[in-house]
Image (cartoon, rainbow, N blue to C red):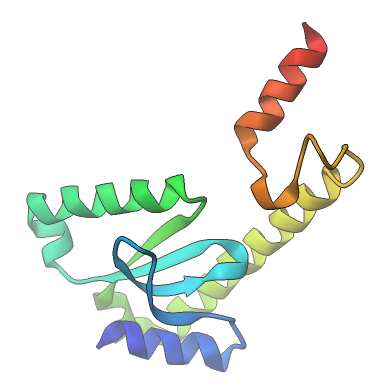
Length: 134
C-alpha cells in the first residue's frame, strides 16, 4: 500500500510520523501529531468519484475542527517520484514546525489563564484582541 511506502520514506528522514491512526471517527493514513498534520494518500477514485470526494472533504473538515490540517497526496506521485515527494513533505513539515514555534513564542508572555497553549484557539486570540480594542 502506498501509505506504507510513504511512511517508510518519511521515517527514513526522521519524521515522527505514525501509520494508520484512528482519531475516533476515521483512520488516518499518516499523522504527525506534534504538528497536528494528517497525510492522506489517495487513489484515483478519490478524485474521479464525486461521492468519495465529498466524503473526503467532510473528513477533512472533521479533522480541521480538531485542529489538524490534512494534506492529500495522490498515490501516483508515490509510485513515480517517491524520494522527491518525501523531501517536499519534509519541507512542508519543517515550515509548519517553524511557524508553530513562532506562534508559540509570540504568545508566551500572555497570561496563562487567558491563553492556555493546550487549548489555544485562533478565535480566542481574536476575541481577546477585540475586547482590548473596544
